[in-house]
Length: 290
Image (cartoon, rainbow, N blue to C red; front, side):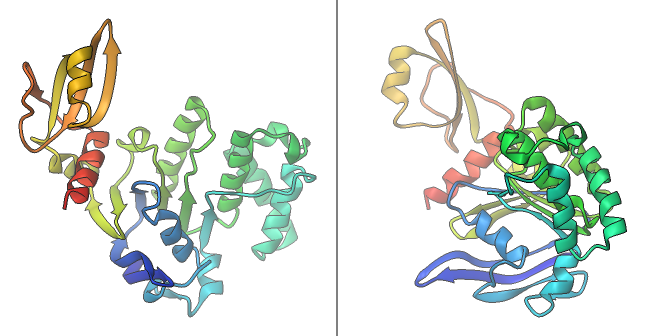
């Protein structure tokens, strides 16, 4: 169990995270929110890279920052900006990381081969990392996070740079891994994980504005999502008044999903079931209006 108790983080007079508490059991959990909401700061606290101003983090009774060495031994972490040594091959790079994690050489060599296979990078093991694409380097980052078979897998935008087929593979991999550990992903790509995640958290304006199962998040937006077909003129007249979750233009008509607690004054508008993206925008816009 991962426990956060009253986590607050302030830089000078600016609080980025304010009084965040939660408990995460084994499973796949998503952290999302607008840019600048504090997601990366929260993950850096959970990774033991920075200390909270107040509050405490624990993983199965191991506390940060009191016992950070033992905490990190049970954690795998992929930061948002994952750097590599370009002159190294992936194999050498991962063996170096295995050493940093304190793994005996004989075990480290075996684990490197295992995670390269899991991350589907074995066929590129002889190429130096300077020759790898962004997506290929991202897979090296995922591989290093798995080296120590962590109880807690923490990843910041792990699907960034991956193509659709790769995202599908890794979404299912994270789901499979979560059967035996806590997997927490900070991501903007939520639609592909909707059917797989056990819970979702929305961080906005320093606080968790929602935490719970995905169906409950979508339920929160029920009655607040509308579909309308507008002409180009109608759209130009209305667009600055509306909160829109999606827009599709087709042959001079604009099909618009509108977020509103009140039925929009538009001819032919109808209420529709919310998607996860609708619910995200609904909750963020509700908070922005307060």
